[in-house]
Image 1 (tube, rainbow, N blue to C red):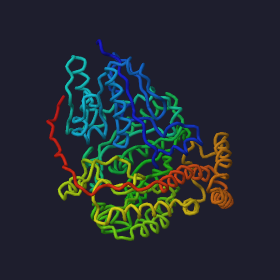
Image 2 (tube, helix red, strand yellow):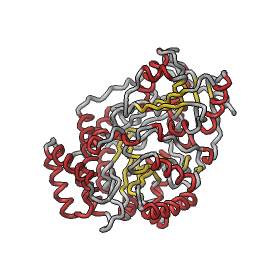
Image 3 (tube, rainbow, N blue to C red):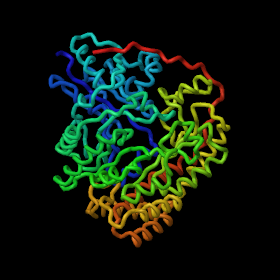
Image 4 (cartoon, rainbow, N blue to C red):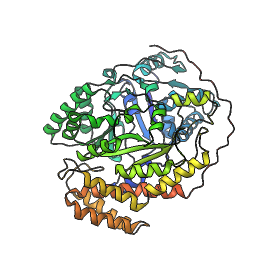
Length: 532
């Protein structure tokens, strides 16, 4: 096997609300989580290969590392596009072949295939790697790899290998990503998950999941675990089996980790499921709350949000001791001109400290994208960053500049320091008196030496910041009312530093003025499925 050294490269993320860059500085970490996709692909490579990995969010990539490799493997999300293209160009300039995969190449293969040769990947390994990577590997070993590997097959997750997290410096990360399921039973118009993974959630067995967890802990990870499923509760029966196994595992291991994940709002309707999540050590769940406007929810096909009282559902989850982080969107065709005011009131009622608000974006592979192409309203390919790029990639029903102004107003109001800390205090009030896990960024709910160090850094940096008065009022009031929740109080403070800092920077930038001319929209090329 002459060509036997693979270099795995993960592109850099731009600074966004999701990066939590300014929060990580308080806790001594370089990035939020290691790349699960690349770690999984690495788990499929046989012992006859040597592997190395570089996460550009943690360390730089040298020419020597590229030159040492026989093949460079790059995985990317759309938001990493700029760094992704730079990596490819560097590798091509140094004469090294590049294979790419992940959500961005899978959804935008036509765009990438049309790039000049010095920027174009040599091999596309798309869709789900458990299906497309093994045939590529066989062809590579035989000396005749094809330029494209695709498959519509939705494989059993029993085929997923144990991720090779040992290739990454786990001490540089705050959260460990693990996956239990793929797919979602709901088909929201703006979401690409169904297109990528289907509507029938596929799951791993509890044994398989716990083996991955044990392996990560054995190679040195210390922190919390983010179960990256797009809807963790998509298969209720299977997830309850996992949770029961997690409860037993936690008890046997004295609760070394806590969990966070993403789910749909109907989580609040299942008492048993909520109880199991609390017992298993879940401290946070991200929900797609989107909007208080029913017509906009109907338009988006967000049927699960129409079948419940969202505010009461969120309160119920919070009352169990689980923090709710929410996603919110403006820019639906049905949004009224005063949508910002509705969203501000909605977020305040929900008492969701971390409100990820974005302009509606038409992602490739979504029903929204296809509809806007048909209506000739699509302007350009999305960047994947809908939280603070002040532009839209389609022509909305409301005047675009008015929507962008509404978005700026919404951000300004919900991330005024006083408003943010008010939501934090209200959330703390909604928690039960005894919270099993009161941590967002730290491994232990006890006030350890590490937590003391974070508190000291927070006090000196945030007290003398531009929002110092609001910070001190929050800290003093929260400690007086909830002295047993000091870890979570400090956690919200340092988390707020990122959100408030980035919002202030966004509001100081001028909105981009996207032209209203509709370019020719290239038809999606239908590639033949490549089977193993």
